[in-house]
Length: 134
Length: 372
Image (cartoon, helix red, strand yellow):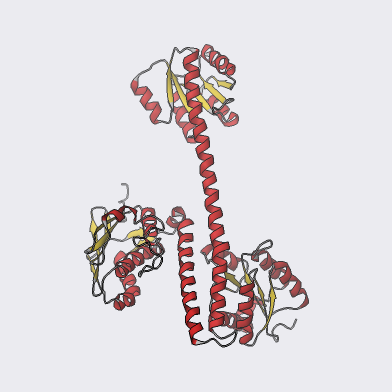
């Protein structure tokens, strides 16, 4: 796997506007961005090409973020997942943490918040102290 | 509409009475089972799931009163009617206090029995309908929360995010006039999001869950923290904030997050609905078994006719959409819900044009001595 040398972020959300805004912000910061509007689509993409990190909504129709997270933990444990949540309650945050999310970001977020969060998570991944991702 | 075919349980040690009740009520179309003592009655109750139980008060072994109490704790919605050969007012009252719906003195005629059972079953029908209605209402409430949270909140949040991207110039250059317009849209949408979040918080608020996280709370410290937070909005309006806290006020048991919300709302309102160079005085003191917290201002006040509705959800004294003072109409509803959940009470006193005073009483922690 070559994820630590590539700069690809996969964004998963059923809301087109969120996908497009994340794409614009992350591309402006030098990332390559892949977009998926469902858990299934995200898994298909990941079978072909692995991102360095994944940004995903927890509430999606049909297969939700928790399902996707479970699949990722099973197949690609080393990829950090940033959970986007519209309504951060202690329950959703705890659930995301239990499932192994690296962190979460509350919607709506500013471009700076998004970039900062992604960078912080990627920095953690390459630090040996956070080797639990690998 | 009556419960036409109901399950009726008769608990009586007299065989003649059991048989006659069974005969009369079966003829009325009901399914009747009987038990000859209290213990047997409780066993049959669990498997038969009756709508109505006739219980003899005087039986050997477990008394009718004891059976009544146990049945009441098993299912308070099952109608219990006591049968007694000693129709005194006090035994009737005792039975009613323990959950009996009605009372029938021995000897009784078939018509009297049918009448009283029919009345009891009518009550049972109403209870079943009420319960179904409550379940239906709860379902509607949950659907509403889900709808507001996902179908309303999510697209607004996504739009706000898009506007931020546009404002950052990530979709091309934005003229200063367009930037101004987009910022106004952004601000308005953020206000809507805040309103939605507040409503969801209130709708999903669970006082039992909150009480699991109760801890010692020092109200004076909390008031200072809130005043610090709101200092800049007070300064903008040149409103003077002051705190008068009695020394060594006892701690109370509460949720810090919820009480912070209470303080921020009340002090925030006192600043918002104030005049320039007005004042807001916060007082904390002990009174009998409570710790009291007052927020007094000399602001615009509330008209008398509006006072009874200020704790209602979405009620705003100035209901105009373009009102100069923005608000969600949920702040005081949240305050009241939180105060109630702490076993406290809130009262308000206001004079239009002169100012408003809110007083909250919260029960202080009582440390029981060993053995007391």
